Length: 131
Image 1 (cartoon, helix red, strand yellow):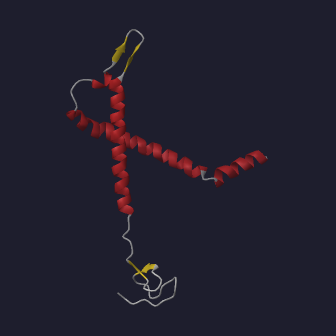
Image 2 (spheres, rainbow, N blue to C red):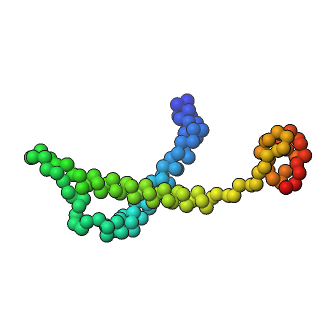
Image 3 (cartoon, rainbow, N blue to C red):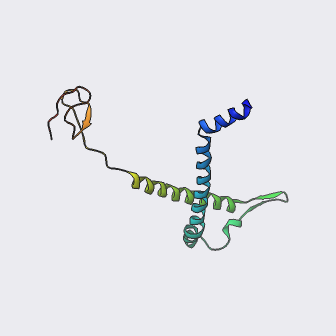
């Protein structure tokens, strides 16, 4: 009984549930971003790249195998495009949440930063002039 209750406490107290939810949501967002890249961005990039199936390009190594450099370049390009899309999405989302900072000035006595609307400095208690 102690092991199961200890494990339950670990799961609930160590934010494992929050982490699991984050992983699931991250996987779902990853699928959406991959679909966006595959269906919208990569066809546009395909217009700029040389025609043909360049992802199947390979360098033969005798009879033992081949280096599939076309696939490697394609996967690297996919990674760069996905990273760029995620970067712009995160940047856009953080801009939506950004609130303008309240105006601040420094106390004439102690140089502590205080809100512009404050009547007294919270550090030294000095009355502030309205600016």
